[in-house]
Structure formats: structure tokens, C-alpha cells
Amino acid sequence: MSIVLLIVLGVVAVIILAIIAMYNGLIKLKNRVDEAWSDIDVQLKRRYDLIPNLVETVKGYAAHEKETLEKVVQARNAAMQAQSGGDAKKQAEAENALSATLKSIFALSESYPDLKANQNFLELQRELTDTEDKIQAARRFYNGNVRDFNTKLQVFPTNIMAGTLGFKAREFFEIAEVKERENIEVKF
Image 1 (cartoon, helix red, strand yellow):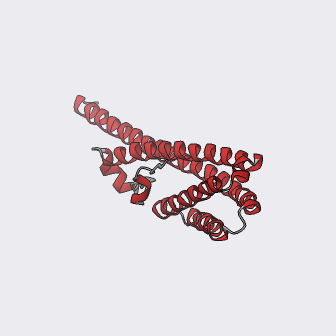
Image 2 (cartoon, rainbow, N blue to C red):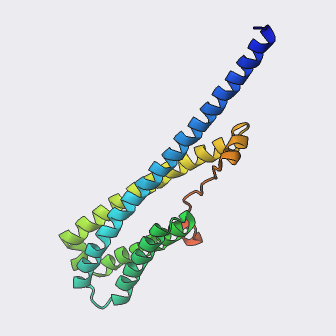
């Protein structure tokens, strides 16, 4: 064998190994993004399961606040429907709306001292607060993985191979409403 043939075979082998490494890296990051999305789904399911219990507890104390309670239930149902749609942007919007309505139900507790002291309400509030914290952590984890995946898709030479193999950038789970970004006003 001539030395030129060995060099050509060596270059081809290096190119093949580089392509395999890029592909495996993309698959690894894609799977991490999918896992992170699944973590969000698990926490959202937990929140969806807690909300009916919270609404029933509040109903006993604040029966005439029916409109607020109905908004919470509607927001929960809309978020569950958005979850099954698979569109990250629509799901983020529905989840942000649900978070806003949950804030209104906790604001009700200030108007009803008996509700505020009720053990069931306090435990549900604690559980929902814990779940909201876990959802935020899952969103940050998801967004970090999306960032890594999208960066990998955009850097050379992976961008050439990723486009050829049909890999597409993922959307971040973002706050859609301006109200969510504003500070909460506290008055004494």
C-alpha cells in the first residue's frame, strides 16, 4: 500500500469518527431535552392533581367567591389541554395563566381568617408552593438543556450535519405575559 492511500484512509477514518461523535452528541442532548420536558410534565401533573383539592377547601369558606374558583378550574383545564398539544409556547402561556389564577386564590385567604388558619388549606398551600418551586427548577433545567442543544445545533461543523439529519432547535419555556415579570405590589 502506498503512503498516499494510507493517508487518505486515515483522513476518511477521522472524518467518519467525527461524524459519529457529532451525531451521538446531538442524540445525547436531544434525549436530555426530552427528559427535562418530561420532568416539567411530572410536576405539572402534580399541580393539576392538587388544584381540585385546594378549590374544594376554599369553597367551604368562600362560597360567594365562585367566580375566582371557576377561573382557577378553567385555567387548570386550559393548561391540561395545552400540555397534550405538544406546543411549548402555548403550554407556557397556559401555565402562566394558571399561575396567575392561583395567586388570586391565595389572595382570598387574606380575606377569610378561618380559611387562612385551616390545616387543609395550609397543607395544600404548602404543597402547591413546593410544586411551584419544583416546576420552576424543572423549567430552568429544561431551558439549560435547550440552550446546550440549540448551541450544539448552531456551531460549525455540527450545524451542517444537524440540518442534514433533520434536527431542529427547541423553544425555551418562557414567561409570556408582561404581568408575570412585574414586581408584586405590597401595601400596608
